[in-house]
Image 1 (tube, rainbow, N blue to C red):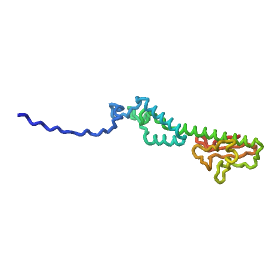
Image 2 (image 1 turned 60 degrees about the vertical axis):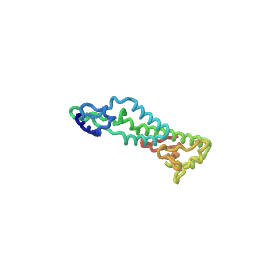
Image 3 (image 1 turned 180 degrees about the vertical axis):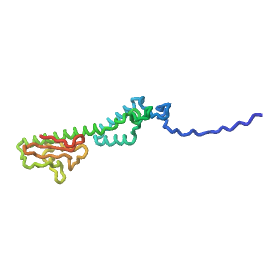
Image 4 (image 1 turned 30 degrees about the vertical axis):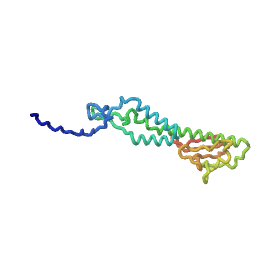
Length: 208
């Protein structure tokens, strides 16, 4: 007579305290921080591609907003410790991406300021050409005045568009159709002084 078979107990595995995708980064010492130093370069290339696509399909301010959201949502730093438990380095929790890779506020600010200088130069050149054709210069403000259609601004569109400019350039972050975000005035030497609030420098000024 056969002995009765013992019932097999089906046990549910305990949930992993560490996400599976991080297991290959864990060292034998559980106190060690994860090591992402050997992560494939494809991860970094992916984020570089995302950054380029955002910059190509949106303006700098919009791209900066979305990439900063990526940074806030997915990126954090951790500190690894040496044998003496002293803080030695920080890294990104995003595999293959240095912590400062997503911190693009510096390059974006520089790009915005470069665009502002280009806009101010274009407006100043158009004003110079306009006034060189025996135009009356007495109507221009002698104190810094906003360029735009809103109350208190000077509407350059009426005299410069479309003959000298296809449109009045606008500040890349704060410019609107009623206020370009740029200021200008005619100084005592009959030079146009154009200015904008910068991001890498307090004031951007062009004299034409």
